[in-house]
Length: 348
Figure 1 (tube, rainbow, N blue to C red):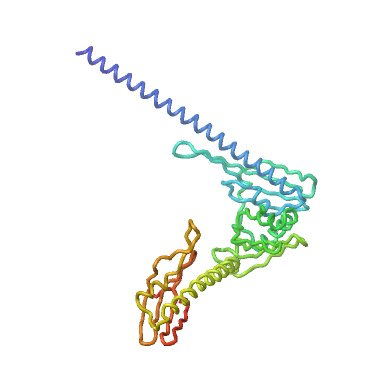
Figure 2 (figure 1 turned 180 degrees about the vertical axis):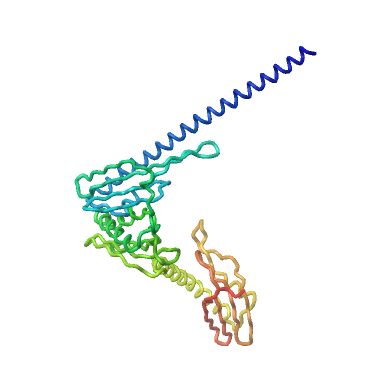
């Protein structure tokens, strides 16, 4: 019995030692993983700052560095804001960057505060960058977005360069449209001119956005900006909708006119029977395979009202791309038919 008890004790001690080794190993592994993740997150911060430096140098290559260009250059998912100062032709940008690495069910992050100094007037423009103490980025960014009028001036300047280099198409695909707080609602190129309807954040309109219209033309290289009422940003779409509706009505009216003529032929004997009515409403169609005209599907009227002198029919007029209800009034004594487009659609 004593020997058996000793074996049990030894077995328990062995299990405890093994469990302790596993726990310690897991803790060491977790610590190493966290340390590696922290270093990787820090590398992400450094890479973001270096990328921002290169983009700032590229943006300033034309001798001018706009705030919209700075916003796109200092781009990082974890960026909490940037401070921009201008003095004697030099631009100073201070920004905080964040790097994140997922570890297990959580994540590790690192942050860094950097200051970029750009001399846009020099050729090529030098860009210096240095890391600062974190408190240097404890500035209050104030308004989340700049005044729309100021942003519109930057957009105009960038479009002027884009249209000079690539014409209206170049202006339509300009980098300025990728700036945070600038949302293109609609564009159109007509007669060599780009018209862009754009929402600029930070305004007093719906959802804190103001609507602006930008016009850019290669010849003579003019770019204009104008603030519109909020519904002005839908002007181009309304115009397209109106043209589409006009084409739809023309197509429907052509088919309705054919039905009108068929109804007149059907009542040549002074009658319009329930048997003749569906045949008159069913227009011939074109066979997709042979291209020949064939009998179309039978169209039943939505409603029929009869009197001794007339028949009032409401029916759906169906075309290849549209459908709507018309009212056909057949006058039996004169064998004549008039049609009317029902603005409110079918009443049933």
